[in-house]
Length: 182
Ligand SMILES: CC(C)(COP(=O)(O)OP(=O)(O)OC[C@H]1O[C@@H](n2cnc3c(N)ncnc32)[C@H](O)[C@@H]1OP(=O)(O)O)[C@@H](O)C(=O)NCCC(=O)NCCS
Image (cartoon, rainbow, N blue to C red; front, side, top):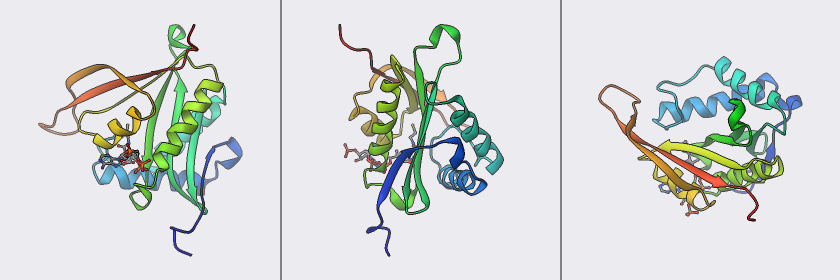
């Protein structure tokens, strides 16, 4: 069956899902994107162990303090992303959304939209007041994706992102205010 006809499922990950196969799939997805130059915060593809530690950390934080979402095509992880409550005690009402990533094989089909929609819904359900994120200034796909979910720029640091020798990009910081309007 071609991937065009296989159902895409988007869901929150639980501890019971975290087999080595699962975290390896997440690692392979991220490694491939980073090797292709994706702006996900790494200058070189992270190891499988590093990605596994990250996934475990987020999922262990639990539904009130974090959510890790995957989009699956059949048994394959096609996309992922997560949010985590800030650790700093004075920032605890808020969370940061990170690492939204879709496999090049499945980009352009709305998977990132679905992942972000799920993450925003779960953040709202967890009582998160402000959901922040940041991305590299040349990331047009990220800019368009987050704008359509209501994120608004609150700051920009020119030349802040330094992925390699002589390379400088803006860091764009955005927020989605989830507080109920008075
Ligand atoms: C950004 C990314 C997650 C988008 O995933 P995707 O599943 O292809 O995105 P979707 O199909 O859901 O489309 C999301 C929006 O991005 C837009 N988009 C996707 N690729 C784009 C591109 N190359 N240039 C401009 N806009 C693009 C889409 O048009 C869509 O906007 P629209 O609904 O207004 O048309 C994916 O390109 C990716 O994994 N990139 C590498 C990792 C990364 O940069 N993540 C963001 C870090 S903050």
